[in-house]
Length: 257
Ligand SMILES: [Zn+2]
Image (cartoon, rainbow, N blue to C red; front, top):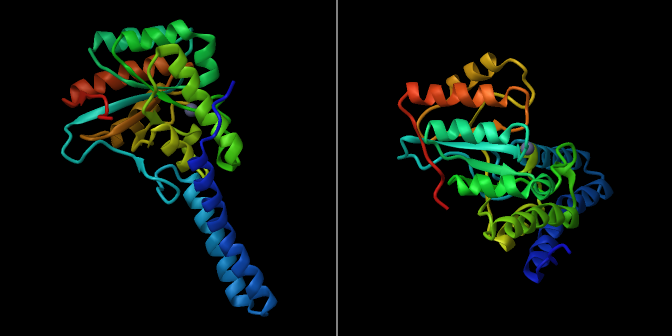
């Protein structure tokens, strides 16, 4: 039974919806007044705000988010998305143990429900788990309406809380997209949104060496590194990333909540 949407969350969504209608009203008024210049300006600026605010992962126009550790940090936060996966997660846990490194695993709710023992094992080894939506609708997450958005975020939160007995405190949207309807559910559920500032595109790339070169270019103190579970190269990428961090003298730390 999915969690019902709290009243305050509904209120905030109605407000967001109302604000989103304002440019449309101005556009209609401009068209009715025959002011084509103003109409074009409103149309293209609104379109630009929606596209950039929704699709650019590090853009905070539609809700506050974290993309790096505090400026004073000398460490790196290691995040691993899209698990758990029985074929790969145990090997990733083993590699992390070997380096005495702790990671933040952003888990997909329906995968977690299929492998609850694996979720509990991640926690048992001292890692954090975060909410990565219930079904990971990567192609459509940017366009989800308020009710489906609530179901994705609250559903995963409920799944992970039932499995581990503790509610996650971090949320990462699938492929980093976040629209107007993400902030209210996060507030209602006590979640903070975490993106990243370093990645090697390991979810789409097949060449682990190329992934590592990209990571090497972007890594430094305070970085939040995005890696993925459940890919053919995930073990190789984590192994080489951990070696790279060691070579650069960068410690791995979990984020403060
Ligand atoms: Zn993902």
